[in-house]
Length: 191
Image (tube, rainbow, N blue to C red):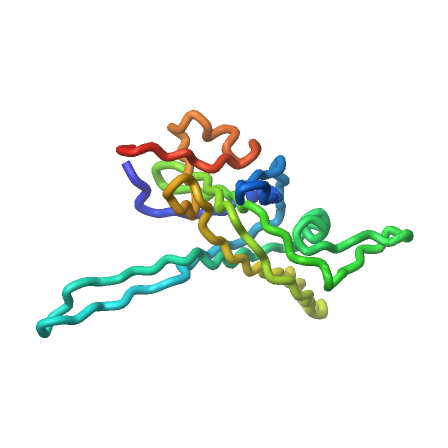
């Protein structure tokens, strides 16, 4: 049975991706990203109607990836170093180095539902650099939030282009799904 509603966001992880020989991707041991507040995803693409004989004869659909917007209370320094190339100087200061290339990573997270939770991995993600912002304290204190804008693109597995993998509590890999190295699904005909 499927969920009727979903809610919550927890267990956000990332895993650094490395492309090797033959365009084969490997992933590092996942790291936890704490402080996630909100996530939204939107497909990159659209549809086009094909008209002939005064009617729609086909609909062409394109899906080039997913835009992920992830809001945090703060972004972990390890993520800044791993993904954006920040470095630490001799005094222990965190230094943003802008001539480093942004790295590719996998993004995993868990959301709850009225029936069951689900865990998700997006495989080939890149993030735009983050901006800082804060405001003065007044009669009450409002927590700041940082938004991470991520583009997830599909990964090849044989003849398939895979956007993400979703695991449910009934799956045998659910317990370790976000804490084990992400695995690109090997799909077989008829499954």
